[in-house]
Structure formats: structure tokens, C-alpha cells
Image 1 (spheres, one colour):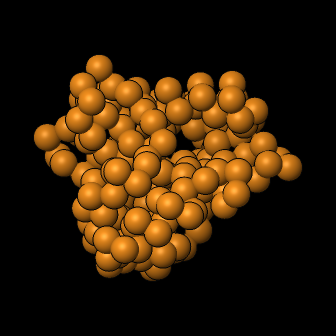
Image 2: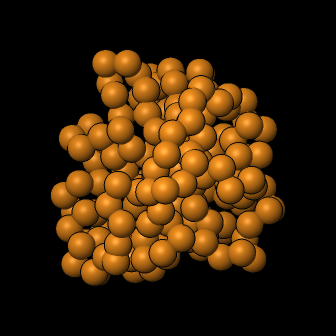
Length: 158
């Protein structure tokens, strides 16, 4: 059973491990490497949607963390937020866990945060992620260059 929840200080080891996957650095404003202190500081002081416009949520399978959701660039005036999903272990990919966690997150963001639009930025080469988000109703609204990569901008109105 998939569950999602806001990451807490006690999750720092998981977040530290995943945030230091170099493949994730290509699509972030703040590429690593990250120290354990960096992650603990983030979780203690910046992992707050209301105060900082960003949060990390854990994706767990039967209480065991397998990935994370990255919520970013919350615009409360436009009821808009960015989302990313990472399930770093290939053994947990292509099993519907990312899709289920995104559906759950969408429901929470709509009902508890009054979010009306969710967007994501996906590298053109990441065909699996593009297919995942499109299967959830996200539509391409633009394209840009980021760190030398073609990035598709997708959006979902909820």
C-alpha cells in the first residue's frame, strides 16, 4: 500500500541519500552534493509550503520509504504549484507507485491547499516521466532549455 506524507527531520537519511543522486541534479535549482547537515537544516527550517513555498513528501510502500515528491514554487495568489517525483531504486519503478503517489498528492493539494494548477518540468529524454504525467492529464504548455537539456513544461488544471 502506497502512502505519502511530509518528510520530517527523522527522514533525513532517506532524503540525503536521494538528493545526492547526480541524475536528479540536472533538473534542480540547487544541485548537490548535499551534506547531512544541509538536509537536516532544510527539513528543520525550509520544508514548509506556507513559509518557503516548497516541501518534500515521502512516498512509502508498506511504511518503507521508496521515493519522494518535490513540491516547489507554490504561488498562493494563483493557486499554482510545481511537482516532481523521484523513485531512485529501479526495483520500485514501473509498478504504478509514482502514479498512485501523484494522484494522492493531487487530491491533497486540491482539497487542503486549494491548488488549482499543478505544473512540472521534465527532460525531453525522460520518456517514462513524460508518459506518466501525460497519463494523469498533464498537457504540454511550453518548452525551454535548462542546463543544456530540452525541458517540457506540463500543466494540469484541477
